[in-house]
Amino acid sequence: MIITIDGPAAAGKGTLSQKLASEYGYAYFDTGMVYRAVGLKMLLSNTDLKDIKKAEKEAGELDFATMIELSKNPEFRSSKGGEAASVISSYPGVRERLLDMQKNFSMNPVFADGRPANGVIYDGRDTGTVVCPNAEVKFFITASPEVRAKRRYDEFIAKGMNAKFEDVLRDVKIRDDRDANRKDAPMKPADDAIILDTTNLNIEEVFNEAVKYIESKKK
Ligand code: DC
Image 1 (tube, rainbow, N blue to C red):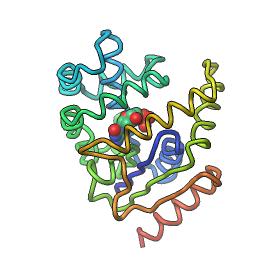
Image 2: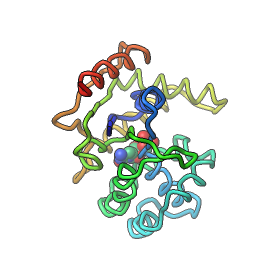
Image 3: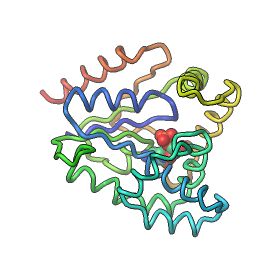
């Protein structure tokens, strides 16, 4: 089974995806990683993020092993890394070059240790609309910008990183705006996606809702 979980930054996609992957024994693909990898390559080589040609070149050369290696860099998950990913993800040529890598995963899903899996959970912005339009189950997870910024802020503090709530909230809003207004691939729910608003739900409640829906689709 293919399950897609899309939605804005810090809506809880990652947590829900990992819980569902462990519940069903499915592989997990966090598609934000492909954009973070290209963004980080640009930052590491001090390339201007406006250099579309260079971003396209990096995207064309990216493979899974390089992406995993780059993900070990502390900047990969930082605000700066997320911002760089958001900027380069707005270039159609970059998205096009990163599409096959994401699509192909569903044909042969594997766990991190290489074992084959018989299902996959995709987490991203366009996985139900562009990457896997044929997925059997699609969710679009959202929450108010304030609640999402608070969750992201708490994560940064828990990791011992320096952060100010106002800065995190501003970044969340900037990213929402850019991700939602990309010309060719705006972040939006697939027509057949179930919308989960997590503003007033904790992770267990969101998980239970999702499982209930998946079980109904399996019948
Ligand atoms: O989910 P994330 O914060 O790791 O994603 C980083 C950026 O990558 C996000 O701001 C937009 C982009 N992205 C995308 O355009 N499409 C996806 N499927 C996943 C992420």
